[in-house]
Length: 535
Image (cartoon, rainbow, N blue to C red; front, side, top):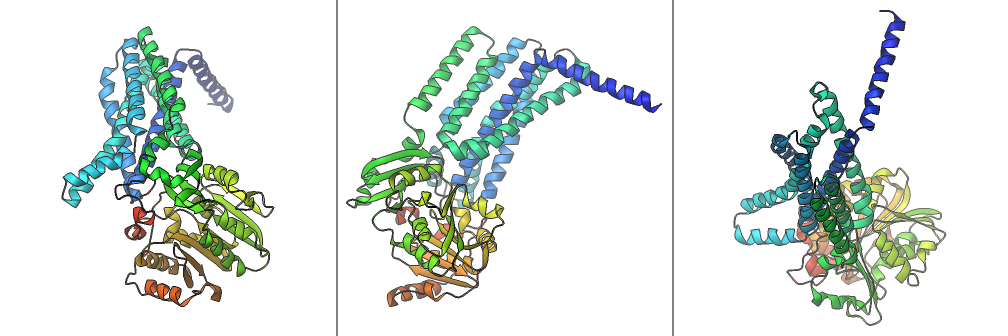
C-alpha cells in the first residue's frame, strides 16, 4: 500500500472518530457521561474524606491506607457485580435505581460520615465488651472497614447501570463505549480526589466538605429522578440539607465543644470559628487568669498573652547564636510570640513563618496584633499558609535556623514533624552550623528522653531546657554553650531525663512518643475527654 493511501486512510479514521465523538456530544449520551463523571467525583470525595477520618483514630498510618483502599475497591466490586443484574431495557427503572443509590449515599454522608465523632465512642464501647487485645484490634479494623465500604457500595453500582444506558442496543460498539464511560467515571474520581485532598478539606474543613459532596449527590439524584414526585422529594432533601449545614450551628463546634464544663476555660469569647484542624477560639480572662488572652484549638490552650516566656525564650536563645544576616524558618504561628522574638533580633534578616491553619492566622492577626507587635507585617517576615512537614520535604533552600513551635506530637497534623524521618529532613535544610530548635509541651522524663534520642539520630549535639510548662530542644552539629541549663535545679532535671532508661526513637511507623504523652493530663482535661484531632 502506497504512503498516500495510508495517509488517506489514517485521515478517514480520524474523521470517523471525530464524527462519532460529535455524534455522542449531540446525543443523549452526553447526559450519561456527565452523570457518571459526577458520580465518580462524589465517590472519591467520600472515600478521601473517610480515609482522613481514619487517621484520627489509628496511630499506624499504613493501617488507614490499607483499610481505605481495600474497603473502597471491595465496595465498588461488590456493588458493580450486584447491580449489573439490574440492567434492563427500561431506562426509567435504571434511573430509579441510580436515584435511590444517590439518595442513600447522601443520607449516609449526612448522618454517618459527617458525624465521625461517634467513632471513638463505638471503639470505646468495644473495648469494654471484648477482653482480648487481638480481638479488639480485629473488631476495630472491621468497624472502620465497613465505615468506608458502605459509601463505595452505594456508588459502585452506578458504573454498570450507566454503561447499560449508554450502550443501548448497539452491542457491536460495546468495547469502545464501555471504555468511554469508564474514562469519564475515572476522570470524575480523579478530579474529586484532587480537589478534596488539596483544596476542600485543607481550606474549608470537614463540615463544609461533607456538605458539598452530600449536596452534589442529591443534585445527581435530582438529575436522574424518573418521576415528578421523586424530583420534588429530592429537591426538598436538598433544601433541608443546605439549611441544616449552612444556617444551623456549626458541626465542628457542636462536635468538639460538647462538655459545657470546659467552656469556662475560654473566659469571654472574643472569636470562635471552625477550621480544618479543630475549632479555634480566642478568649479574654482565659485559662482562669484575669486579663489573660489565649488562643485555643478545641479546648487545648496553645498560647497566652500572660505567660509566653518559653515561646519567647526559644526564639531569643536561638537568634542569639546566629550570624548576622541569617535566614530563619518558624513553623507554627500560634499567637506569634516566637515569631515576634525572632523578627526582633538584629541577626535575623529574613523570617519565613509557616502556619498550616488559615483560621489561626486570622485569629492571631486580629486578636494578638498588639502582643506580637504586628509580626505578620514586619518587613522581615513572609507568611506561608502550608503544612510545615510538606514544605520541609519540598524546599531545597538552606537556613541558619529552623524553629518549630507547634501542637503536641499526639495531634495528627503535627505528629510527623516530631519523627526521626522529619528530623532528618530538617537537618538537611540547615547550614553546616545551623540550629534546629523545638518547643514541646512538657511531658514525662521518658517522653523527653525519646525526643532526645530521636534528635541524636541526626545531630551531633542536642540540648534540653526545662521551663516548667514546656521543654525546648536545641540540636546542631556545633556546640553551643548558650543552651546549657540556667540553674542548678534545671540541670538536675535535665540529668534525670538523660539518665532515663529508654533507647526508643519516634518514627512515622512507630510512634513511641504517644506512649509517654497524655493529652488529658497535660491540659487538665477530664479522663473521658476525647479530642478528635489527637491520636
